[in-house]
Image (cartoon, rainbow, N blue to C red; front, side, top):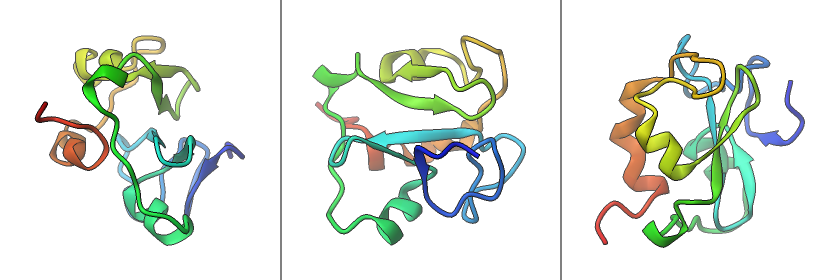
Length: 108
């Protein structure tokens, strides 16, 4: 397990009780606490503060963690990687794009 990934982890690849398909191998660093959580639900359950989203001018920060090889992607890298880790080529879940607005400012 990755001790610095918070949440209800079910395996060493950052899968949690909420999202645990073979492709659910990323964790997100939350801007509000500078901590990695397996998913937004894990943050809601374990953090004692409201979340903050990453603004577009902050997308050069490393805030996405590959649970397969432990590579940290910048937000820009994540959006440009076509759902494959740029380090180990592991596939990420493309359905995560449905939740991007929960982590990242997609409007401005």
